[in-house]
Image (cartoon, rainbow, N blue to C red; front, side, top):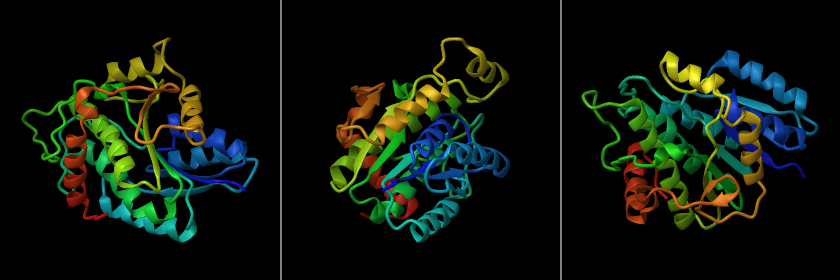
Length: 269
């Protein structure tokens, strides 16, 4: 019986590679992306790889929480049982942006939107798992669970990104404590060759540096995490459980982030 696997941020990079691999294994793959043109190209690649059910697609922009709510409603209507939610969507914002929902754009797109989506899909995820794409960029990040708005005066794209990746790790760990019916993990996919980053120099580095992880290699890891015997709540680097930075391993901080995030997006356990 094919599993239903929802992958956000699957228009390119790690998400697309994993979607192709899982479709080739005969799984029911559901691709979520933001840009219609890139989503269309990704779906053509996933469909070409598929050996099982017809892959499905949904569009949503995580910069708008109402679009996340609409996405969740459509997913639940189409798939009452979801085996895996891969919270893979994310990125870096070059300058301070406050979304229409009132939050700093990086923390909303990389944490609050996936947090909301997982909550809304929770009924369908029973006995399934949530996989959160984090990053070693969380190391040294100064995430303040009580400040999801930030300010333009002291904004740094890298600091904001690192804080959002720490939030992914904290969310996975806290979900393991609060949602015993769902397995939740986070992982570092490697420094992946992609169109990641802001600014010409950074984007050039992520496209051409010879030692970078390929999207296919990172996709292999995400694919492995969908079936592996994992440690609930753990952070993985490669196939190994790894202790994250102390701030991202603090259960008190994780609980506080959960509370402020739930209040921010309007959900309750």
